[in-house]
Length: 320
Image (cartoon, rainbow, N blue to C red; front, side):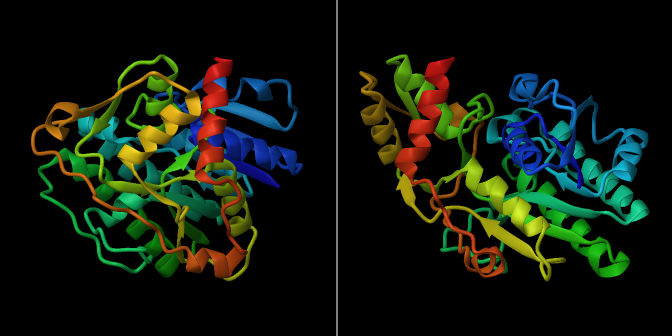
């Protein structure tokens, strides 16, 4: 099978490329390297079944050519991370909405199957849980850049669903909950890489807000294996699937756990959201997925616990 991965030089995309190649598929990666890194895919140089194309999903003619040659498309390219969304809201909105529209139009043109990656940010401030795919979205003011990512990905989902419903495009939508593992960078607000790099340097581990907000973390290998299973499964088109762990932890306890695992001398430092991001910044107190739907569809389960996830990130950063 010939697979096109948009955003394939990113953290998740590069692991997806690894697994698809390992299974004997041909893989083409499209990435503009704005948040993705060439270092994530350099080990694939020389593999005759791998091709890297540097370019943007906003380049219609390029996306057209690549989709035409592919059998399936994994659309991962997006502006991601709270830091990036807050600092570059206009670029993020354009990439996430217009880029996805271009990809969907091309898969429609050439009758290709596409998997669209969305996000748990969709749920906004809904702190209920575990969150089901049909649960309500609760968002703040549209004038707060914090909610731009959630809104853009919601538009992506709506576009994808209508391309399936009205134009019969074979579409699968997944919402990812805090994916973690080797190659992830803390540059865009990803919390575990940031905590780990601080702890390894014995620097203060900086917790934004009170530290009582909780999240669940899933290893990237579990994520990409689930994406591949969904792409190869019948009866999942036009549906949305949560993919995440249900092992919940507060940010304060997460920081303490990382300090313990790394045997760091770091101390905890609390930074108000207004200073970490922007005035009036809002965060979610709790975010836990209900994964019943994806379990029923492909037998999803988490194979790496939180301690194993942290140790894999620590090992990655220690190797340099």
